[in-house]
Length: 481
Ligand code: FCB
Image (tube, rainbow, N blue to C red):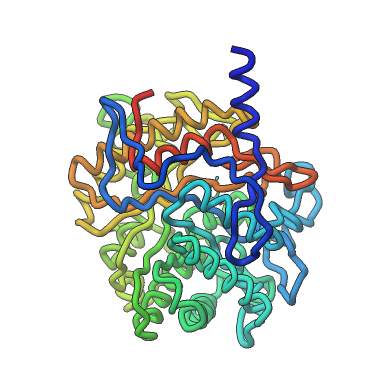
């Protein structure tokens, strides 16, 4: 027993640097269990098989993993500014070095290959490729994404690029950022440059990551960059973010590039906590804010009935939404990227209660059935748009032996499988996250990665969940627990 334990740890903690065509000779052992060529692993009895070609993936975002914050001409983003302000992040942590992915990109690519990833979802740092947020491109910054994308394609991994994962260039923030209508066009112009620069290799694009979180944490509670606490400004910023999405989709079509584009929305199924009429009414109202306010404009080209009229009479959002805006936001997308972490249970008084166990991230209430409910609801209410899950995962203080993460992922994969059986067009599942990284205001205190990143040396070690996930991908399905 003891020896088995030691062996397991040794296997999962192997530092990986597989054979890389980009860097010949840089390889050591991959730690991958040997398999005879052509021998496909099969699912055991009771296993759940996923559709052929299912895009098993993992996600990261630029500020959370790249580091190299002031290198090769990168301009600062709001997160550089914010994280360097005293008291903004736990322990004063910043993304200056993060997971050092900028310098370790080939090692990370080999880790992805070793996992067997079919798809990798990353984000482009706007201020790395366009230091001022507008105008001239930074060739050295762009080169990094060429290296990354080429490295993915060489390894048979499909790149999925997010254009905005919260890191607004500081130069644009200084001009008003998302409170400014112009910011939507600045974003579309940057997006167009990326389509021209990388669009012959990247064919899956995501416009925005979680505009709801920018609005709630960046502009309402102020616990994320840019640290505003202004509900009125928050609502306006939310509209401009959605407008930016629509303009970017239009710009994509304008370039004639082949491929697919959509938004990445974090959505939460909302349930009345009991059978009372009051709870049902409150849950419907919360559902508008959590889900419909984002889904309706993006997929139906309109805000939910009564949403705008329900805003305070002198609220700036009333004039911020101009004729024609909802139609721009609803420019036909090719896919919807769904990010699911937690459900919301609402009382008759409109309060929120937690009914299930949570994680180190106390907001993350574990409820895998919520994923099934969410996916089937999208199909029911919004039609048959292709869906991919771009984030789902959990933090744990269990370091290498993260069995709790394995159980979490297994349960959520099972819910996804059930949704596919129910007819949902779910094409992929990207685990958050590939690597331990900078978890925003929580700094490095929460570890979300399949791969451990040493906080001091940045050495990579595969966790048990990475080993488990590799088997899932190889079998294209999950064996019973
Ligand atoms: C999501 C973010 C992602 C990460 C996970 C834990 O809301 O998009 O960057 O922080 O939460």
